[in-house]
Image 1: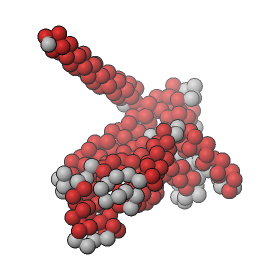
Image 2: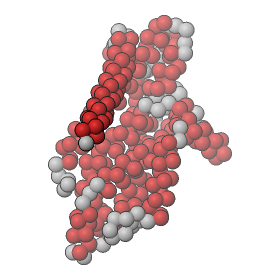
Image 3: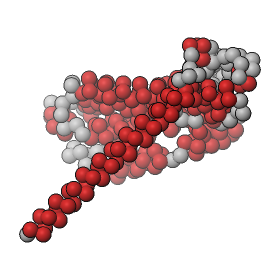
Image 4: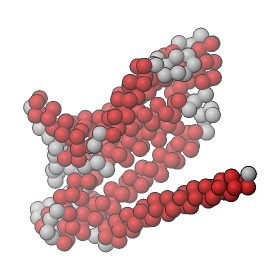
Length: 291
């Protein structure tokens, strides 16, 4: 008995040490990335860089900024997130209202759909870009903002849908049972009871998907193209911050390479603000959800 107690004590100590080391590793990695980006990007960051588009000779170290990439990234990620939401929200509601029985057990259809979403989640973004590029060649479409939005929507769809789905599955089944017992249809339950409870998870899922989309380069490399101008139409090519960093780091000019770190700092700040906003919205809207 004494040996068993001692072994459990050692086991608990080992787990605690592993947790502490994991926390230090994660926090240290994040701190190292942030410090590197801030130290290298902050000296070259100025107002002109975020308020101007590239001018003649920009990639040779002359005047201009990355406003085209900032706005292009917002257009691409915002449009992709909106399109993914329009597709993913009905899927998430349908999986929990129509593709499950009254006890909340999964059916074969819901298991298959969730498996497909999980597989899509694990597909590398470059594969989405290659698929989008192949489809563009097939229909004769040029690289454009619209093509980039469609590919990003496909990339974000499994992230957004599965996040909402998991949040719905944490809801008490009694809420749905009570609504059904009062005579509500499954559509009414999904559009009122479930949707209201989904708001915290919906806000979190949308912002997480947006942060994933705005930071992706591979999927828009062949589909959205790149331009020094701000797109005025869905058929115009669009620049993005990840590609701006990629192209500027690939030049032999130190001034342009310094701007690449500044662009990376802007991108990191956007993703960081998006992550904080998702947590704040989730906590604020979570007060109105029944647990």
